[in-house]
Image (cartoon, rainbow, N blue to C red; front, top):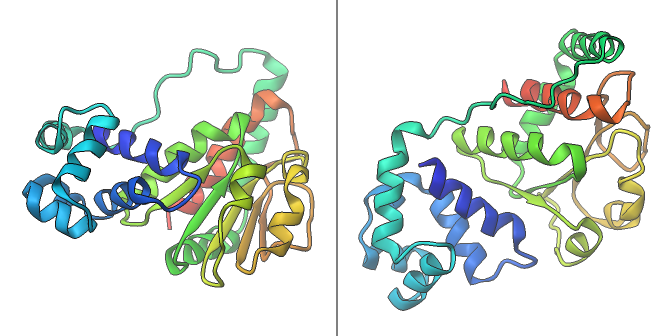
Amino acid sequence: METVVNSLLHVLNGSYSQDTNYNIAAYMLSHPHSLLNDSLEKMAANCGVSISTLNRFCKNIGYLNYSTLREVARIDEESADITIPEDESFITDATLQERLIENLNEIKNMEKYPFKKASDMILQCKHTYIFGSGDSQYPCLYFQNKMLNKGKLLTICYDSPARISSIRFEPDDLIIVVSITGGYLSYFENYVRNAPCHKILIGNRANEIFDLQIPCGKYENHKLRKYSIMAVLERIADF
């Protein structure tokens, strides 16, 4: 079901508000069994929309109609597990390789508490929003799929300053910011500070506005960041 899942996640991650399209995508992602088995009429009723609206949604994301989307989901079901593809740009510089190994070992040998705590917060909170850019985007998408397989739907937010200002956070929501050096966070830190919800920072710069912080290894070279972030998110997903 990977093809359909990715289409639905694209809608979820690109929505600036919880509109009709967001709600349809969120329902389908949260109810994979229904997506594989429900009739058009039943799915429309469960999403709280008309049949024509549901078919129009499916057409807008690249499928002829709901029946086509459901059939593609059924065909793809056996390949639902997400795997990490070969990375042709993997680090070849010997010094950077040594530093990457050191980062990964540092993350691997960290006590389990912050990773277990982060996992518990994600599972217990109502909505989880991940803010990341650049090198963090692929690891975040991978993590989003991993958590979806565990039954927890997360939202990745791009264009963070504009996106975060459009969200009305509730006390039982969770914000996760991926910002190793703190530079990315600086663009919307005040929004995060004022959000009345739980907060996790994945990064190396201490910041008192977060309930939990997980570092990503002492080496911060931009060529290493993707792999260090992936290692942190993998440990969280393992709980």
